[in-house]
Length: 413
Ligand code: FE2
Image (cartoon, rainbow, N blue to C red; front, side, top):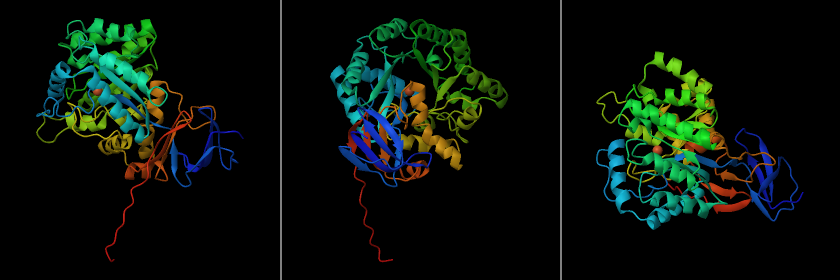
C-alpha cells in the first residue's frame, strides 16, 4: 500500500487498536496490521490516537493580552468588556497578528487543529477583522480558523454595529455573531437574534451567538434563538454559546426549553473555564457555578461542545490552549464523572465541535489526514493526566512533536 505516513499500533478513542495510513493528506486505511512502505513511521503502540482537538469558541483578537493596559480587578464579564474597549484603542493590527500567531503555535502543539474565533467588529478602524483575516490566511493548511462577526458592544447598542457585521461578512468573515443579553433591553436583544438569523439565512451562513451569558434566569434569548432558527430554516447551522442563565432558570421552564432547542437542532457551546470564573460574582453563598445544564442538554438530544473562550486576556488570566483542561473543568463543574460521561467530555472537545463547525475530521478512510497521538492509553486517562501530545499531524503533515517530560523520583522507599 502506497502511503506517506504510517501511524502504527495506536489505540482509537473507542478502545480498538489500528494502524493508520496517510497518503496525499488523507487517511487511506485504518485497520490492524497494515504493511508499511511509508516514508515516515510513527510508533504509537499503546498510545491514544484521536482526531484533532477543536475549539469551537475562542477570542483570538484578545488572546495573550493579559495586563494590557491593566488587569480586570473585579473579575466580572462587564469589567472585561470595558477593559477590552480600552485595549482596542491602543492595540495595533500588527500586535493582534503577532499575539494570534503566537497563540496558534501554542494551540497546535496541544493538538488543536481548528478554532472558531469570534472577532470584534465594533472597532470602527476594522483593525481586529483585518488582523484576523490575515491570520486565517497565514495558518491555512495547518489550522482551520473559522471567524465569527461578533458585535461585542451590541448589535443595536453600539452605533453602526449592524453595518460593521455586514462589512465583516463582506470581507470574508464566516459566521454571524451577536450578544443579545448585552443589548440595552430584552426587546433589543430579541430583535438582534432575529436580525442575526435573517442575515445568516439570506447569505447561507452559520450563526453563533454569545447567548444569555448571565446569572439572570430571565435572560431567555436562547428561546428566541431556537424559534428563529426554525422560522428561518437554519436547523443544524446555529449555536448558542455560553447559555449560563439556564443554570439559574427554574426547572419547569427548562422542561419546555430543552425540547425546543433539540427540535431546532441548535448546538450549545458552554465554556467551563470562563463560566466558572465569570458567573456567580454577585452571589454571596451558595455561589452558583454558572455553567449551563450540560448533562440535561445532552439527554434532551442537543449537540454540546466545550469551548475554551479565553487565554490570558481581559476576561481570564490563565489558559494554556489545552482542550483537555477545558474538558477536565467541564466534567467537574457538570458532575460528569461516570465513565460514559467522561468519554463524552472527551468527544465534546474533539468530534462534537468539529461537527458544529462543519469540518471533515474523523479517523476513517477518506477523511482528512489529521490526528493527534497522546501519551496516554485512552480518553479518560488523557483527561486525568493531560499528557504530552507526542505527534500532531495536520492534513498529512507532521506539524508538532513533543517528548514527554522525564521524571526521576528517588526517595529511598
Ligand atoms: Fe466568548
